[in-house]
Length: 194
Image (cartoon, rainbow, N blue to C red; front, side, top):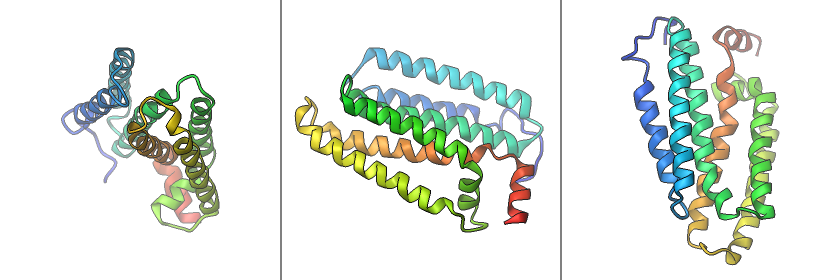
């Protein structure tokens, strides 16, 4: 993709907003419907739409940077929505806080090693991020095991599988999102020096 001007029609703002909106609405009804969560999802979707417009307004002459930032915001929002059902199932318990801490720690870790994740994703070099990725996914599997063992104590044991699956998707999206913060200039430099 060339670094060129992005018209509003090419900006993908509306399509991305619709995706985030529908995922937010769907996750508001898993494991059970919640009007409060629906209002939070709608509010967050509108906030993301405003962020998309601002990103487009200030980066529409730099298509590569614009689409990277648009994708970053999209992945963060989707990660939030996909993680919420599991946290809602275990609301007020130790597992809810553990899940929240894992979500926040994944976001912080991915930001710290974003360039290594970028190099791993771009395929330009095998990095030392591989063991870190392995550890993160092992923590996710361990957390999933705890959740499944705790599932018999909840009122929605059938929703647990869907919630775990959504949570793991959310963690994976959150983990890969930070790589999109790498600017095009920095990405070229990283690829040349790797």
